[in-house]
View 1: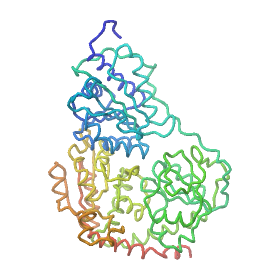
View 2 (view 1 turned 180 degrees about the vertical axis):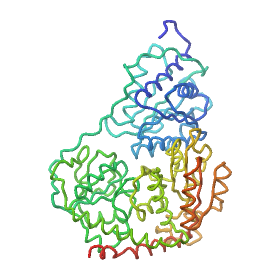
View 3 (view 1 turned 90 degrees about the horizontal axis):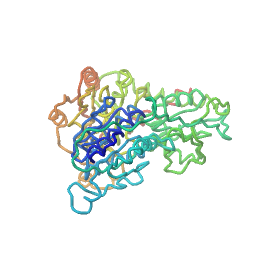
Length: 558
């Protein structure tokens, strides 16, 4: 550092540049920036670092979910920079999702200095502990001081360590930084960092020794969710465990929801041991059967946050199962019984698709999963019915699959799709209400990095999931439609075109697949509107599918 005393603007420019330089040393590559005045030193510092990709998004709420998508796709922390005031508050929904899903975000909010608080200065709100317990760490160092420059890199490192979970479960961190005017200045030479360019090393949790668990020859059902890796699932299957999971987990046994709705099947596959890792699938039928069986579950914590709303986990181990331990070798015939039953349902589904026909919602879920698998393209699944139909009726996923399954909301899903796909390729599956809720995600689209994105929108004229719930029968049709069905008479394809994207509407299985393939073959965003039967008819269709699938497992077992 120079020996003369520079002005505060130069000091804070150097401070901001040091933060991003240290984060880059740890592995940061993506920074999402929202335009704003008070955050100018941060924006300039990020843009001036040649090792960082800067994504500029105009809407902070959308930007938060875009950053979350980048973090999901890269499996690395992503920084997001916003100005002071309500801009910081707009990130709260994405921070909540990142918290519950264990996604690493470096949330950097600019702020006014302390003397401008409480005096009516514009764009000034209370940003201290704004996200409360949703963040792993909160830091507010005040206006940068040259004499404190030795603390800048350790500050960045503490935030990074908390985000990646070096001391526990990773997630978002919040760094609230005060800046004084003038806001534009050139940085000085940065404080020295550690030698070389080695990245921060985050060791995976040690594998468990399996404790006193012995499942040799027993019927083991593993229920897995977000955070469980493909190789872990394969190890479970190789050890004779039947593995069912949520939409984000690859190679699990398909159609578990449909199978478990047949009580005879549920009784036939009652396990001896239930194992839990990660989040829970969306399936209500699975949750009901777990309660009905009344079997205390064994869990491992190494896949990330555990979901246990029914309190069925009796013991949990650190890390992941140690499959080198022979005591974890289970009854292969039990896994095979599950697999055979799922294969019977899949054959029936394929047979009904042998001739082209009008789309229904299960068809759409199956089509996007098939396209994702065959093209090895990442898939992002929206909440409510899309994630359930993928779990319920689609074949097992093999390409990376993501969903905002932390808070399970519909907020920001379009932006998450764009975050996953920028610079690469992605297929998104959302409902019409989810699309409209986050239509601002189309404003910046994939951004300057470009890419290929096919966003499939299931257009059933409102909130389809509510037609499966008690509200649909307990209320008059008029009240139900007003409060829960919430139909919107917007032309979704026209909306997408208004934002400068390609858009087309389809009604048949063949046209849907043709348009997905066409969208993946060209750069930019393609919105494919899948027109399906109205919501009441959709309930009937699902009932018919379940009835047709019931009992198929008997023929597979004979």
